[in-house]
Amino acid sequence: MVKKKVRKKRPVRKVSPKVKRNISKPKKLVRASQRKISLAFKNLILFAVLSFISFLLYNFLSNELFVNLFFLLAIILGFVAVAFLIVLLIFLVLRIMKK
Picture 1 (cartoon, rainbow, N blue to C red):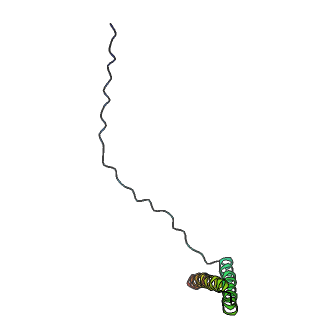
Picture 2: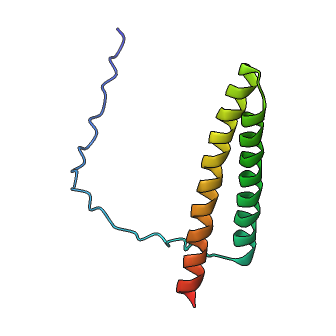
């Protein structure tokens, strides 16, 4: 006759309530370096000029496809230019607050 294998009972571990530890992560500070300010300024000028050129082409072209294309392009590039203006102003405020 074949002997049956008997499983050993594992001891039951008592579950203790876990304590959440608040580990503070080091916060990254945004620094307004001269490189970041000049990059934001260059991008602002670039997108403002591209938006202005698109707006001029929108006004002077007569083909409906190009008119719609350059109007949409002028709006998108204008919003991007405004976003870079906001970024530039934030960097300038951070630079002033640092001093």
